[in-house]
Image (cartoon, rainbow, N blue to C red; front, top):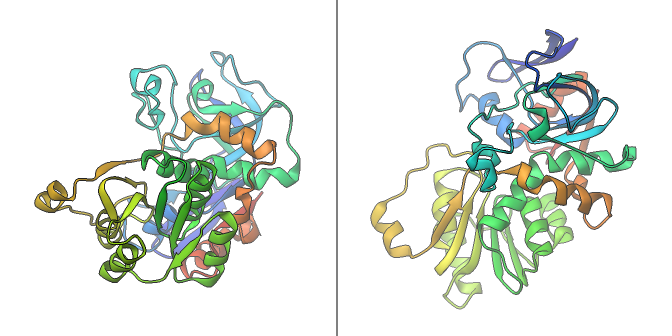
Length: 338
């Protein structure tokens, strides 16, 4: 088969790769219904995260089970499944505490931008739907695999409560779905920080009450002005850069909560500033598997429509254009169809 391979910064190819097979008895092989390009894929694409030689790409996926290993008991061929970007046995102590993305047997999915995918630890990683879903629901179901699950974790980790004032730093797909998540959790005021008009529009559609275009210290000053000098109850950091992390901490009220879900690049915090900020920090790779059953149900019940973050749909063989469009900010998120 053919799959997506990153050879060097800016050089994405759809080329012949090995066909997936059952390697361990706990594996499943699924035929991809849809996959996509993630904002985190852009780090190596831009040369900001090193790779060692040609690297298979893709970690967001949903599809149809084709084959399972002899030890798999909860997943059957023919089922439609969604899985996390991080595999989990869903039985170890970390999994039992709800942090499946730190499972003691964790592997990170990295070959999902292809027609067929092997998923290790299938019983603990994959969640089947009761019935095969409609084609129309597949984009939204795909988001639960990572980008919605991560946005949901951002809101949860930032302790978003009914009536809260929430700030979302980052207007990529994770930030936008962080807005949606905060809205669903009952936030009263949701301030999206964005300079991009189409993203601002979608943020408002997802529940943002205010848009702030300033960044850095100017962005902090604007948030403080909007909150009578107090700061926000909850701030979701969905970028992973030094400026965005400091902006998030400085825009939070004393005793407030900051979540950080953007993969960090060059982030270093000053202990003195952190000590006197009096904020709670909670983040890391989202434990998507914890939320998957509920998020899948919200999608299938029509309560949320997170698939709207996909503003570019391409055949999988045109994956390189998906990377280019997102890198140039011509697209929020590119959906890829095998």
